[in-house]
Amino acid sequence: MSNQLTFQDPTTRFPDITPPKQDQPEPGLDAELIPGTDRGEDSYTGTGRLRGRRALITGSDSGIGAAVAIAFAREGADVALSYLPAEEEDAQHVCEIIRGAGRKAVPLPGDLSDPEYCREVVRRAAEELGGLDALVNNAGRQIAVEDIADLTDEQWDNTFRTNIHAMFRVSQAALEYLEPGSTIVNSTSVQAYSPSAHLIDYASTKAAINNFTKGLATQLAPKGIRVNSVAPGPIWTPLQVSDGQPKEALPHFGKNTPLGRAGQPTELAPAYVFLTSSESSYVIGETLNVNGGQPTP
Image (cartoon, rainbow, N blue to C red; front, side, top):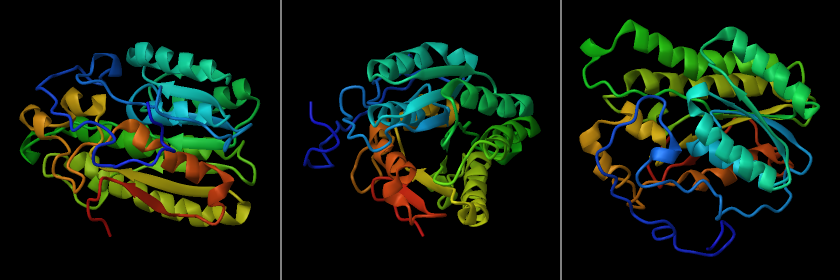
C-alpha cells in the first residue's frame, strides 16, 4: 500500500465512499464504523520528525485524533491519549499501534467536560511521559439538530464544555510543563467559516476555537511556545454516525467538495505533524485548512 510520501492522484488516493445509513450511540466507535476509516495503520510512514517529543492528544481513540497519535508515534513521539471510557476498545487499538512503533502509549480515560479531569489528565500525562512538549486539543462533540427550537440548553452547554471550555482548561494546565520550543495544535473546522444550519452549536464552538488559537498564539509566542490550529473539512469518522449528521445525508457525505469525496483521518495527520515539528518554527497563530478544496477566508 502507498504511503503519504508517494506521488499520487488525490482524487483517487482513497475510495469515494458511499456510507450506508447507520447509527451509533454517542460517542461512536471506529471499530463499528461502516465503511472503516484509514487512520494510517498501514498508510503512514514516519521520518523521525518528532523524535523524542512527548505529546498529549485529546480525543485520540478514533478518527482524526487516532490518526494523529499514530503519526506522532511513527515520527518518534511518546503519546498520552485522552478519551471517554466508552471508547476504550478504540483506544486500546491505537495504543497497540503506538507500542508497535516502539513508542510509549499512556491511556488516560476520562470526561473533558469535567474541569478536574482536564487538569488531572495533563498532570498524569506529564508524569507518565517524563514531561510534556506537545499538546493537541482535538476532542469534540457534534450533534445535529435541524431546528433551533429543538436545541436544548443541555446540548448547547455540553457542546461548549467539551469543545472550547475543555480546550481552555487543558491548555492552561499544560503551561506548567511546556518549555520554549513546545507546541499546541487545536482542532477547529470548516464549520467555523461556513456553518451548517443543523450544527449551530458545534460551528459556534469552532469559530471560538479560531479566536482562542490566535489570541493564545500571540500571548505565548514571546515565551517560545507556538500555537496553531487545523481546520478539517468532511472527514469520515465515528462523529458523523453518532448523530453528527442527519442519517439521510450520510450516503452523500463529502461529495460536495472539489475533490468529490470525504477525507480520511490519515490525510489530516501530516498537518498536525508539521505544526508540531520544528519545521514550522515561524508559523504562529495560523489555521491549516485540510478540507478537500472547500473555500475558506
